[in-house]
Image (cartoon, rainbow, N blue to C red):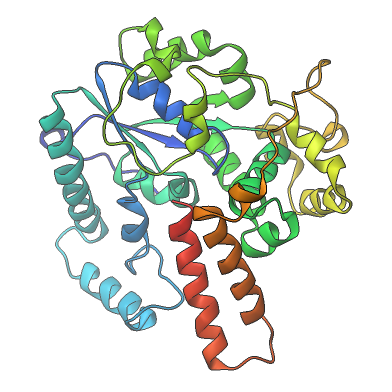
Length: 347
């Protein structure tokens, strides 16, 4: 999409968008920024995602209304506006400016940080609406992303995680394309963030136009209100830690078939896209450092069968049962509602 900056008198609030795949360190990055006294952060507001699929730029495959009719109707309507697509973009921008701007103004801060991983999949739309925003992209070794995703949301069932959400096949090409398209964005690697957090924070402040604030590194010592969705594991530490950089490789060796699954996924990813994430397919499984990672804490029976973990396990089993092609309309509806509830259960 061609960028069209908003008129000077409609500059809107100062915004910084964090783009990255789920489980790649976006929450950690957001917490570091939120520890700056001039920053307001609200994780995963998802303001932009539904707007991207209203029908003009893209549309959903199924909805309570007819998506095809909506798609055709809104494009016909926009064609009749005095400035066509630019008027539509201005309207979307005005909606978001109102929400971002009023929350920022009420806080008395200077910069609003939106950390919504799904924005990486709609980055052309995001850039069209906010060409003047600042962007920070965080990448992490794809093997670590997938291992963390499977452990956090699928009880360490890698094949169920891949069947439910082909995370790497969706996010790696989208993020790599954004990096090639937007050289002005700040690109941080998770591996650098946890090994040199002070340097990463300096780069963040410089990119965001903020004064350097060394206490940001100890994000856990700074109380932040209003934090919602994201990785709860970030709160286990006071500052970035490199302790688990290579833990995903131990997870690969822990169960048969995991390496083969990752190799299958690698076949779907291009070399340029992998290089954008700082990896090479020929050295993909090699450790990044000599010393081994400490073992992950074992999940006891009580943890595996209580609270959100139990809910996810039940929903996953219901969803698998509803995936049988011999099932009828009722079980397909069950699968749909399981998908919805699974999404809610990991927010």
